[in-house]
Image (cartoon, rainbow, N blue to C red; front, side):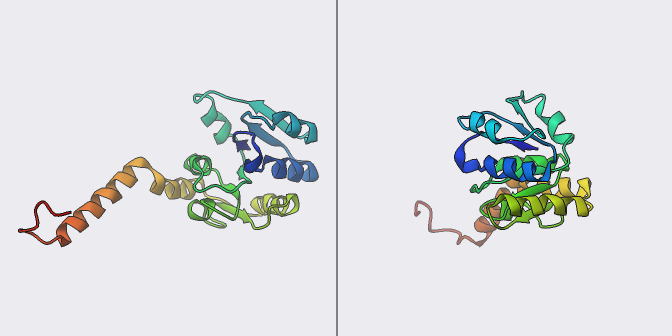
Length: 171
């Protein structure tokens, strides 16, 4: 499954070509200017759903075998959300995915932006046993509450090492 805006830098075309080669089902949720071109290249196993509501999306994600993230982004919240649902991620090994996906634990990487490399990663997912609870646990480190706690701890450490007295008003 893919959840994305359908625009060039998201590299949805790689996934469509890879799943065409594999003749495996791929569900693509989202819309964008590339939708018609992607639909034209898609084989019979690739399904475009369009936009879904925030209420519907968890149902789709929970029902997928793996989440495909073929583009490069600074962070990319969608793979983290998929992991929060216990689903492994198949990601291009670049950008934020390198920080959010753990190879062979929460997903797999493909190292070249080609349909062939992505297809190999898809096949690797089938050979591995992923533990949804381990994947969910990993995703919790990106949770808002976890971030707030780490930030509080950081501020406390800085304040504890700050010199006291006589420096009020200095920045």
